[in-house]
Image 1 (cartoon, one colour):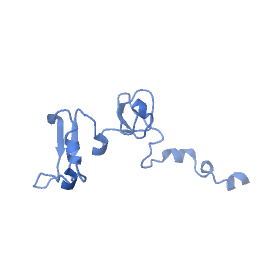
Image 2: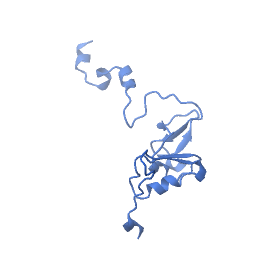
Image 3: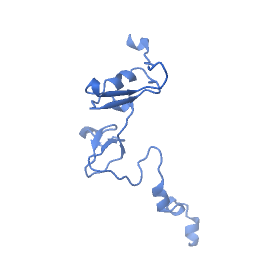
Image 4: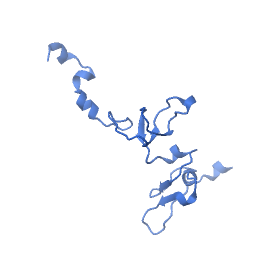
Length: 136
C-alpha cells in the first residue's frame, strides 16, 4: 500500500468490492439477484410512467432487469386497483387504516379464490377500522 492509498478515504479504498457486494440493505435490491424466467416481480421505482412502468407494477421476468423484488406477497396499499387471480390475506394483526380491509377483500377476481388467515384466538374475527366522519 502506498502512502497515497493510506490517506485516500474514498469508499473504493476503504472496503473491498467483495464486502460491498455482499451487503443486503433494507430498501435496496441485492447486488446479485438470480431469478428464473416467468418469476413474478414488482417494480420498486417509477421507471417510465407513460409506458406503465410505475412503482407497484407487477411483471414477469424475461431477459431485462429492473430494480425489483420478488412479488409473492404485497401490502394492501400496493394491491389497490389491481385484480388478482388468487389472494391470501394475513389478518393475524388487524387492518390498521380506514378502508384497507375492503381493499384487501375485493382484489380477487372470485370470492372462492380468497383465503384469510386469522389469529388462533376463540373469536375468529378481525377489526375493520372505519371512520364515520370520512363517510359523510
